[in-house]
Image (cartoon, rainbow, N blue to C red; front, side):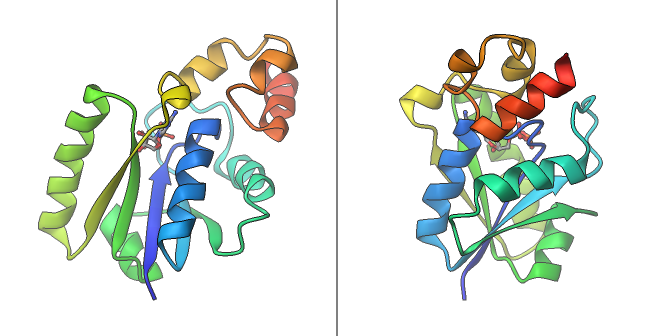
Amino acid sequence: MSIALFPGSFDPLTNGHLDIIRRASKMFDKVVVGVGSNTSKTALFTPEEKIGLISVTVADLPNVEVAIMHGLTVQFMAEIGAKFIVRGLRNSKDFEYERDIAGVNSALADVETILLLAKPENQNISSSMVKEIGSMGADNMVKFVPRVVVDALKERLN
Ligand code: ADP
């Protein structure tokens, strides 16, 4: 069985992340969305809140699971039996960053990194941008994040 890990901060989940999850779910038998527990960025949502938001959003994808990650990525992958890491690429900055991490991970363990290109309409979406414009009307926000995330952002930012 091919198992892939899609690790990230997901603070919060965006339509860009969701597109990568959907596409990965067609490529692998199982996709585990791994929510980082020890991010250095100041998080707006707790790992548990992120799990809730992601779980509701991917409820229609039977082969997608959501989990809180702990330890090194490759250690967590060994625990869940994943051989593939999925990451999304928006631009050349993402590419440089992902290339370095992929190199380290493949030196540490027998894992393969699969980089999926962001769709053009998602190329400018980032969690930090979403947090900045989170006070915009819901009609604007649904272009960037799933509806449950719009509601959670409104509650958190107001
Ligand atoms: P991290 O802090 O680990 O980069 P993020 O939640 O910011 O966590 O991103 C997780 C993954 O999703 C990364 O591979 C990132 O490049 C990818 N990603 C982020 N935004 C988008 C987007 N709009 N379209 C496609 N991939 C994206």
